Amino acid sequence: MRPLTHRAKIIVSPLNPDKAVSIDEFLDAEVSQFRAADLLDLRRHVNGLRGKMESEQARVHYDLVQGIGLLIGLLESSELDRCSDPLPAHLAEAGVAAAYILKGVDLIPDSIPEIGLTDDARILARVLERNPMLRGDV
Image 1 (spheres, rainbow, N blue to C red):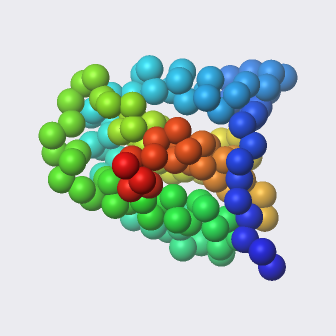
Image 2 (cartoon, rainbow, N blue to C red):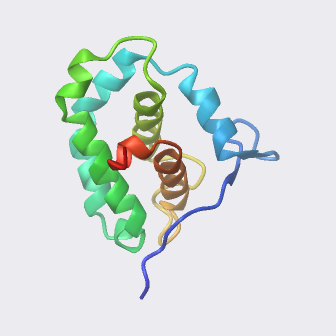
């Protein structure tokens, strides 16, 4: 079976299920409220991210597994020791993605077999696309 990769740029609004929004609109709204303290708090949840990455469901989402590995590396890096508000866009977006992945009940509840992590994968894929420095491309 070929691993899934996610590149769609439209999702259903978490606040209004009858409305589709772009992932960029969703990220911009979330980033505007995300603070350095929120990012530092995510360090306590690295094991939760590892658990998602190692789950049976995540194995079909190749880009999700790789992306979570990048998020874990960032959260464990010394770069966060120096972060302050306002956060650089790449750190804020990485934090929003990590927080979203850690939620068990989101646009598509993670407990739904085969598709539960699709929304997580789509959001993380877009964050990595928007921020090449998170992928180490810069």
